[in-house]
Image 1 (tube, helix red, strand yellow):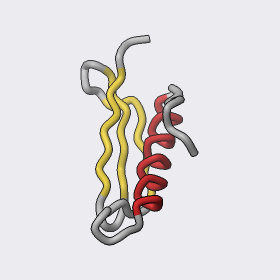
Image 2 (cartoon, one colour):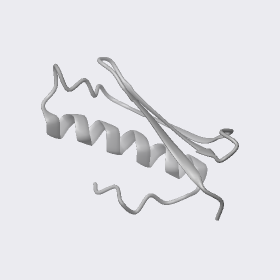
Image 3 (cartoon, one colour):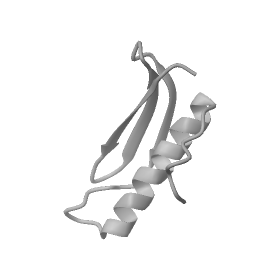
Length: 69
């Protein structure tokens, strides 16, 4: 399998994730609730980041085994 990149953007209103190939062309996108560590408890931030990443991976039809749910 070619290398993949996972990008995450956790903000105050929502979290976005994208899985892209080495050519940086998006292969899958995901989203979740807020992930601002200044205003949210850390477990909720981790949950939002994990959910967005898992959604992006599913859309890209790849697995991210290191993400615990």
